[in-house]
Length: 299
Ligand code: XIL
Image 1 (tube, helix red, strand yellow):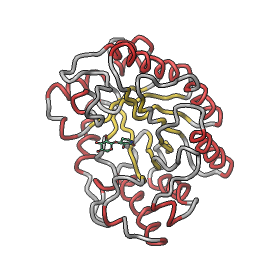
Image 2: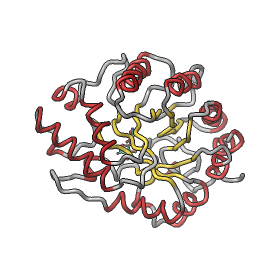
Image 3: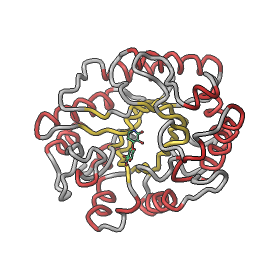
Image 4: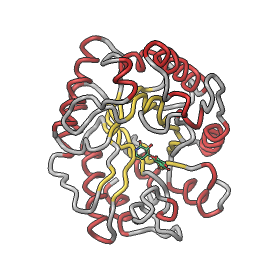
């Protein structure tokens, strides 16, 4: 196969990109997306601030544009993200206790309900753990206590029974205290019948990333009985150092049968969120980089 999506498809996986709807009208952007990728995720358009700017007033323009584009191209759509401590609309900030719980549940119902049946997997909860494996002290954690994550998963399950439901985080690229904490939560959820189907590994890396336990870490989650997904891959640096890290991540996913796909966090270096770096597979002029070939060779 000579595109990322077609190569990934040969082993039943997807190869996706984060998309910002404002660039879909740019010919090279759309052409590269359509040619290379068979899955998309909204870089920002499905987040809480974008979808519910005032309480109870939902706006789906950006997300719908991305879903429509994906559907016209036969691509899968990942959902990102229902509940997160960041990019919350300002009205959420002052809410306490039961009010915040109600707002969170209504938000999940509103967004997951709107996209029900169209999302392959939802990042239900994003970035809820600290480096030491404890819970991040977000407004959600402080106001709602430990139960908020399972409440979010149960609400997502009710709103979209077809989507796979993922927990997603960064810095979980190794067997470490943070991934241990998440592992314990997933194990507990599965033991108690809390609906969870997958764990997303963001995989925002630098060129000197230590991948020595990356595959083993994916595998231990898979062995618990969930799928694993590489959800936001990008790698700092350039040239062969960068290509080597991309290669290592790809090899790990391909070696784990429950690693269902890889999403890179953008298409071109031109629009990467890491604005002073060049962390993606296509350069600022949409030319394939060394890392692109490394990925394609392994898929
Ligand atoms: C980033 C987007 O790429 C930026 O455009 C936005 O300004 C901030 O959020 N982890 C996540 C993503 O889960 O949602 C973040 O996306 C990058 C880090």
